[in-house]
Length: 338
Ligand code: NAD
Ligand code: WQD
Image (cartoon, rainbow, N blue to C red):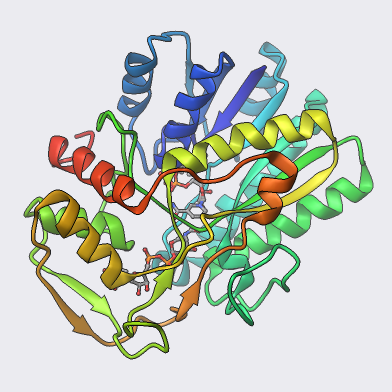
């Protein structure tokens, strides 16, 4: 297939481009590079031996640029990663988040509509469940109760896509709700490269390990969990990337609007992650317990049964793979792509 990947130089996008290339697809990437470097794509091409990825520095809010791109190519599908994702920043800059994430997605869909490209795979998030009534979380659990504009932007986009599909059911749309992506390609050549001090747990751990940060603060040890620290469904980014290929396949076999959790189904605590990282990599992670972080929930993990039943996809990599590959990337690239 000929596939357009928005946000394809970013963390999850670059890993997905790699899997698309390995599977023989033709890939065009657009990205405005606000949170990534085109170096990731150079490395993806190097790893796969496929040097035919086309890259355009383009913003998904640029309707004219998109129209020209769609006119010049004959895309079969779009995988849409482009967006801003920092929860704390979204609280400080809500309009930027709504304009970029919601406005950008609407503009992208308008350009797709004009070009009659009607297959879209969208990066949603487990954040749309808010505080779940129980775990594991199934796709039919209520959404809502998001606590920050980032999460609300994902919820709004999900709704827009649903309305859009209702208006024209020739559209094929997959809304993929990611849990907590971590790790890197096993080569250690591509990985997560945050611009500032990381907000997320795993890049924080790896930056402590490499000596860029002094110690990890564990936000709360009084949650009603097995060891008092927060529990999440950490999923290897390569498993997650493969979920997008499974979604394209599913839409080709059975068109429509589908929504899937992409998680492993297993919850690990923050302390589990720290201990696994230390054990597998032989590196100490100095840490201290601090107050809970505002907006955090105690436990969040998926029921991934539907994705397995309907797409034949399930996560295969282990916790040890996640912490090993995260460390291979960080230790070989202490300054990321810089
Ligand atoms: P990332 O920041 O590495 O990738 C997003 C990419 O989009 C970046 O390369 C950025 O430069 C680009 N971008 C942002 N706004 C753009 C715009 N207006 N036009 C063109 N490009 C733009 O983030 P990621 O972790 O790879 O996340 C990819 C997607 O998955 C995002 O939509 C994110 O919200 C979603 N998601 C991520 C996580 C996670 O924990 N990483 C979890 C759930 C959902
Ligand atoms: C995981 C656990 C923290 C950092 C966020 C977004 C979510 C999704 C994924 C995009 C929690 C603890 C963390 C640290 C810590 N993104 N922690 N010290 O909050 O589950 O999800 O990223 O869609 O929308 O909200 O991920 O990695 O930030 O935190 O103790 O320095 O690690 O309290 O329990 P989270 P996270």
